[in-house]
Image (cartoon, rainbow over all chains, first blue to last red; front, side, top):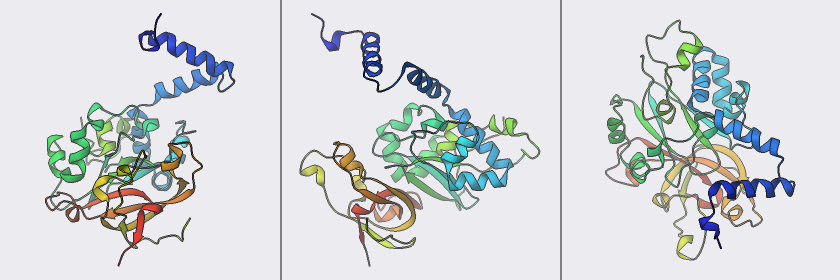
Length: 194
Length: 95
């Protein structure tokens, strides 16, 4: 007899999906919709928000007040997601996000976290030696800029709204979105010109 | 829920270790137990995850962003602020 542990995962998944639909918890269509939303979640979504905030001061204000609503405004589905907080970088202060407890991450707007985000080393060093950690990511934070580490521990998910780099004056929103990477929205790197 | 803490209120994280008493689910990191910080912002109110994790009825608690000076936690820390989401049940008013 085959035990649960020996059963191929595809068959287990199919069985769970059938049970959920048979019991009326979800429909197949709802499951398909959720898979589609998860597949579409990527750093490109967060980058679109950042680019809009760089070009539209009113959107920027709405994004800082309520990240989830600002995401919805750009067509990013946030239903059932935790609240999204947006951390505003300034010339005086830079934000860095970590989840020291586990792996809280704003998946709706950044997709799956990079592998190092969940590592014990990143989680330990981000709170204790964040300046040293940034150096390892090749990021030089000017001495006078304060470093604010946000440990994501509870009901919010956090993304950084980085500073718009010099030399991008007159760029379109699409051009701007193309230079914003996942690390820029975690706070380990800054957006750079190609 | 208790009365709201205003931005700037001085607080201390309870020096409590429920994990030494039995199974639990805690969102307050070890390194902050007993630490002193300042309320930065009220983030809203949410059902207590310590109960939700065990499918128990969960009280709705105020959640705050609390700011700490890293060097008060680790003397050799590098950085100007650590900001953490903490539930009111973990916070005591500090002088």
